Image (tube, rainbow, N blue to C red; front, side):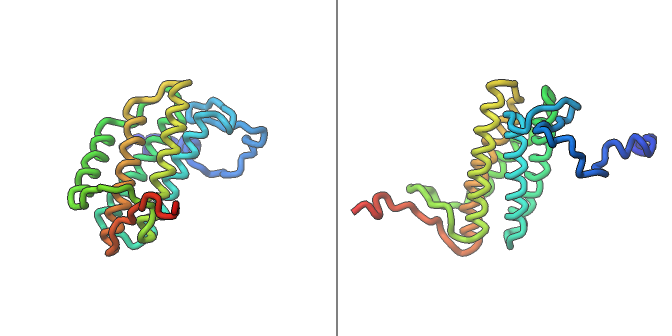
Length: 196
């Protein structure tokens, strides 16, 4: 028998979100995964919220018509972001693994392989999926800044910090790859275009 089958119905219900409106946050605090409470404007909750916002925007990108390989990569990333959120809501817990970081590096190499070398900065845009990927990239960078601030106050795992850094790089590459898949090239920045 599995652990779940050995667990009583009462214990299993304790792990389910059977009641969404709890009123426990009305005073400006929220519960962490270890049962402790913190203010809703704490560094930890900022990081959790920004990772959640990133995951939600990746969900928006997944609503677009995108190549199957990109879709599979983004779905895996959504699961990884839930792992990251779990680590953030359990102070002192290390959930993120080096293998998750390594997978992002492999994906970056895979998707970057066929892209032309960049000689100019690019503007976020082109196709709608590429533009959403760039929105995800900027949210990822904000989440990373928030996690750096949190790490200054409370240590975070190396894997968690490396994961969010590699993810922003991958999202930049995916923006380019999605433009190419949509029949568009990069939107190149023209230095001083409107300065004259």
